[in-house]
Image: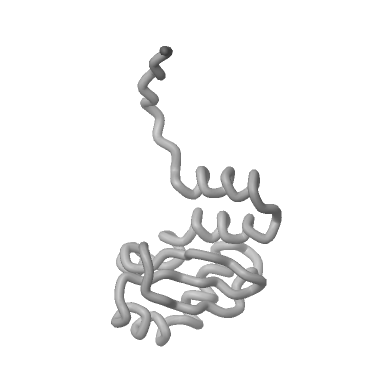
Length: 104
């Protein structure tokens, strides 16, 4: 039985997700991969620790949050988050966000 060599290079999770999505799904999920790659930069460190994109359907971004308190707080920031994500993307990809408690 062959042993694998230790891999010493790290890969960003966004790159891994992008590759996996491309192999199983097509262009619809490439938007989610793009959003995953820029999420931390678009929303800031504090929000990124408590909210993560889960799915992208049409122009709707579904985001998991750590608690109902975070879901409530982010409702107030929703339009700002949409604007910032689209700005960092360089195109209008997100028109609506829904927040739900789930794994982050």
